[in-house]
Length: 624
Image (cartoon, rainbow, N blue to C red; front, side, top):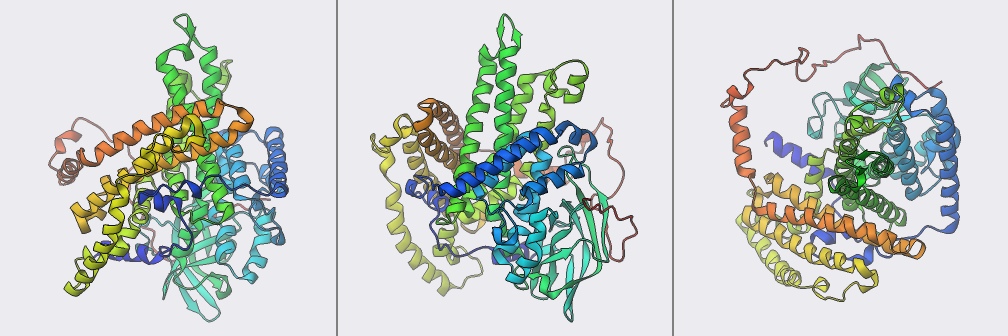
């Protein structure tokens, strides 16, 4: 078996293979626009909503009176008193059940808390989300024993920081190559290995560590202060300078067998399932960044005068403002709807959560870039420099740096596209997978052909016409009804395109990453249009036609992007791009690199970590 096949098999085994609950996202990619699954959006009970709002008010007061974002950026550290203040509010246990010392709030209010903190200090938002979304609380909530929950969750709720450790110097999106091991020794496991980019790892007291055991990759809760655990260094980044991210070495670290989460070999499944809702933290932070950008763009474009009028009156700037404001509204709508679906628990939201993460991280980056452009030279200048010469210290360039990591965090854009694409074609692979499997026998292929023939004979006719072709459909959405009709039609078109791609490339489809990426990006635009229309109609009761005005412009922008992606499914330079890249890597175009000097610091591309005890100083810094 090739290395690629091994990696694919490991990932496939970790997937949730059953679809027990309905999924809006899954049906969308099948050409079945199930608006009833997201509209009306689920509503929290009044008591839970009131409790969540009270927490948000307290959090806002604390941030406004006790947190200096400029200080965090300047010192590259969140002060201990800020961390302890957040802990006192319960911010480290927002979604932890009350019986374990947490606040027991909804995903919706957790998302709104991250939106608020993300707009003010993205480093604080990252601290809280890395702790709760992928750190100890969420895996234990889903897979932990009662004993584990009682042992660790109260500590997390009180403010003991946790971290998640999967990535290694030579292992990123390919967990099949995981090198950290956990060897059973009596009542303990013995851990050895090195983990990279452990967000919160420098200050964490509890760690979720992925390590290879006899039955595969497994997950453990590890005490950060255990003998043999060394944080060898704190990493520094272009943005999020306040996060405590490090390199952690394990040498003969003894971990009680009782700290194994779930079963041996279940580690990747735990990680992926945790991320189904854990990924919603990033859309929340991105929505906060975008909403802040709206405020700055509005104030600046009104104040700054060029050629006799405020710059917001010039079409070139007005177009950017319209993009920023429409996108901010949509990102909050996507976050809001996804969180409410997660709270309701009646839908399987693995696709929706992944689409929300993918879409928000890409669009927030574009919003930040456009804000810097509107601000001009002041957008490129740091907030401290602006303030030092007497102007308002707007951290536009900082936000651009801070949001960039979201396209990499918790699954890069490219990996997210492939993961979502795999779920999008799951039904096709279920009915026709053996037909395109080169390892399948002739008998297996014959059976698959018969089953696929029956499925497609029923399914393909449903893609010809639907409610999106009826002029009066979705009339209760008023001026936004046309956008939902477009989503219904585009959903069927997307399903037909996916089928054509499978028919054309069959087993080679998984290597057509450009095609699959565009399929997913179209689905993301359709999901965003839907969420935006649902939110605008809901808010019309209180705000009148204003939400629909913003939603209409966003939907028109999103439809243009979707149409461009549809065209590029079949008219593109993918094959030529791949050939050019291959030639470049072979050295054919060495002349391209002539006439330059490389300022990189000498060293191997990937650090050789080796095994054995650490020779570095332990920079682990518990919050005091």
